[in-house]
Image (cartoon, rainbow, N blue to C red):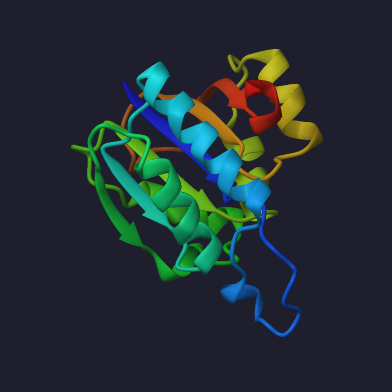
Length: 169
C-alpha cells in the first residue's frame, strides 16, 4: 500500500502587484499555516519519502517550511509541469513516480490539485473528508489518499483525510 499526499501551497502575498504570479512569496498567514501542517504531518507519521514541488516561489517556500518540521528530509524534486498543471498532467506525474516510493507528497496549485483529488477519490473514500474537499481546497491544506497498487496504475485511491490549517489551531 502507498500513500499520496496532495498539498496546496500556503497563502501567497499580493503585497507587490508588480510581481508575476510565479514570483509571489508567501504571506505571513501562509508561513504559519505551512509550519502548522508540517508539524501535523510529522506528528501523524505522514512523512513523505519523495516530494514533487512546483517551481513557483510560493510552493518552494511552502516545502521549505514543511520540511523544517520533519525529522528527516526526503528526496525532493522541482517539477516544471506542476506549475498551473491540469488534473491529467498531475496524474501523469504521479503515474511516473518510482515504485519504491511509499509516500509521495505533491505541492501544487489550484484548480488542478482539487480537480485531481476529486477525480481520483474512490467510492471507499471518507465521506466527511470528501465533502470538505468538494467545498474548497484551501491554501496549505492536505488531502491524504491510500493507494492500492502501483503508481503507474493509479486512477483511483481512497481519500482518508483532508487536513485544513484552520482545523489544527
